[in-house]
Image (cartoon, rainbow, N blue to C red; front, side, top):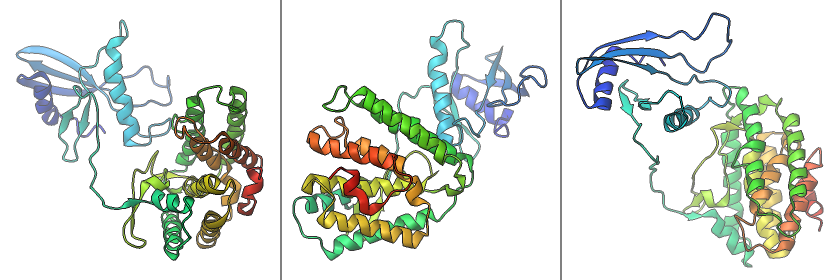
Length: 361
């Protein structure tokens, strides 16, 4: 990332930053201790010398090196630098940040230091949430051919995107680590539970977390499974138009991961809506659940899937059982979800036909 930081590129950036003319820009690499002191660093700092309104000034420009330790993605590196700019000045005796910036594709530099929030703008896509189909079935509608066709289309989409292998085996270990420890995943969802919450207690959540940590060590070595994923493939992130034409929204937590995350995310919702309707996996939802599993295994050829999906089901079950996310759920339904997630965590291989036994019904 040092190539963009030439005197010619830095001069207009520094003038915009200071609001005054800048001359005599020079760039040189800074040392970081004696050779051999440290085997890995997050970036190479550059010293920038220049004259501002005739006065000599110096600054240090530093990037974050792409790589492991949570820096694989551009968003990771942006997060670290935005935090540093905001936080440096609040610590006594700490060097202060003058700005945080970005490099455009054409090589020009953009100041971001005065930003307070960030946003994304996407295209508008018409359609209706797939959740509406499941709500209709939950409320007593008959399973239609279109319901089967839409489930098949979603299944085939997952088979298609999961066929693409990931570029960096280290991302698999990261994704499994984040499944357990990320604020949006198992530990974060567990921390969000207001305790006590009926039968849900701190010792119960602790025991579940400990079992999920054990699963992390079972899965982290399966880096050959790294695939393109959506990451949040639930019915509210899927917009259908006529027939089976759909668009996916809001992929999350990285481009690459474990395909079980997507499969668990969607199929857990078939169980969730069925529990609301029947108190068990039954009728239309049982048809959709088993059909999705059978089709996915047949078309993907992923014989390992039943061996790896348990902690992903635990994550998704913790979400839908959450009194924060679903405050009006009946306590009996929450208990069945907890029975399910604890049962699957205890199984070496998930068996789709045993879901009701996992739920204790």
